[in-house]
Image 1 (tube, rainbow, N blue to C red):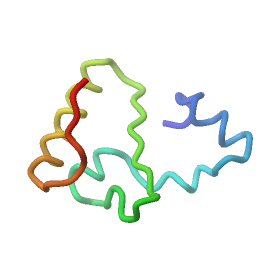
Image 2 (image 1 turned 180 degrees about the horizontal axis):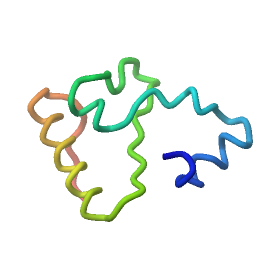
Image 3 (image 1 turned 90 degrees about the vertical axis):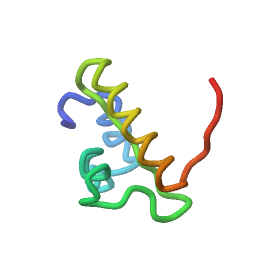
Length: 77
């Protein structure tokens, strides 16, 4: 995944963080294999290297899960 993600590799190359900071993929969070944010300062990043339809499908799945769990913030665009 990182080879296709220049916008991740640039800050890694600049030393802003390391690839070890990436602990899983969104599918791992959705399926419960790993936790998303645990601490308030944690960041969950979805980096898509696919097509826009996949982005929308994943966003909807994450949104639905957040609603069921009562987490996150609902806001209007």
